[in-house]
Image (cartoon, rainbow, N blue to C red; front, side, top):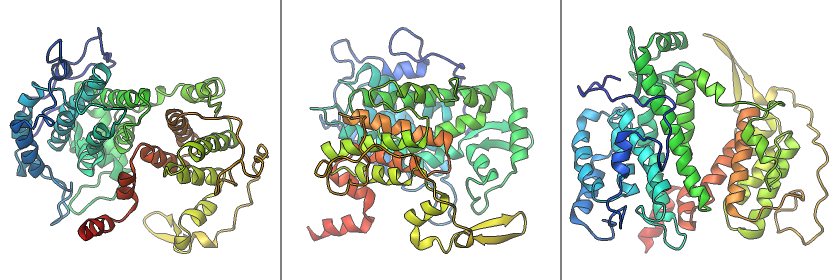
Length: 464
């Protein structure tokens, strides 16, 4: 893909190129970042703990370069990469990466690359993180000490920042002969997923679909290969943490990556979801044979899976914010849109209205629509005897599927989330499941930062 900064286009990542931690070939750029420092110490020293001057000075400088927001507070325009020396910061980072294998440096490299609209450089950085976690879980920095993954999770959390997610949306994916570079942001605006900002062009769907069909095949295949590698790498990062009983905490970036892949390669995205004889996705079908016992055949199966997750958290981690979110998801299974609105946004339901029409519309208030008949769910298994559940859990049915670990609970929660995204995309359940997974590994202060207004914690600090 041609870059508008005059640099030579990046070489394509071949479609279907295997990713491996051993003998299979890696992209040379990924291999260079992940090459062991030495046989005795493959990841080198932790330059942060060593208080290395070059390392500390670099981060002090780059934090002043990275924008606090992707959109300008003055005119609302997207970040202008010509206003800062992003290539200079990327070049300054490379000597540090030759001295240490550090997730914090790789994440920073990814942030700089995507702000510079360099898709290949961004993907290589994420792939290097995945490879390093697979190769050097115990040695890569920041290290996990006594099972504590917070420092590593905090480093990865920067990939969820709006300055990364929005930057990837705006990164050109292919070139159209008549309308120029096409980004996923253009597709979002065209299909109604986002509103065009002031001065932002709004193409129609037909123009973008036509542009994709007319794009240079080599350029489009390069982009597809990059997005495939990004998707695979994010999955490897998630799996690396899951194997250790933890969570990478990545939500927005994997979701966006899946959407971009569906945009640039819709046929491959569809064929990547082979179904079993009854139409069930293999990953969902295989879950029925696991110890959790979840087979995504009905709403009752999903409710029982959520009940099993809630039962685990009520028994083992009652203070976890995951518990109330899972209970809420359980309550909303099988509910109509009107009932969901009544539960989640009761104060707004009288203001909600459907816009009916095309260029000219009329409003159809939600509150004026006839109430749907109550959905009668099949009878659930009997409730446990009094005293067998914690306070607040009496509405959760007894489940025959007992979960014994956090990793099993998170894995089952992800299965339920994927099931609803596939079978009932309008349901709020997958969003509640996604948030529940994200909070499952966070400490108390991190949870407070997530649920409280920013001013609340600033005021607490000021009082001290």
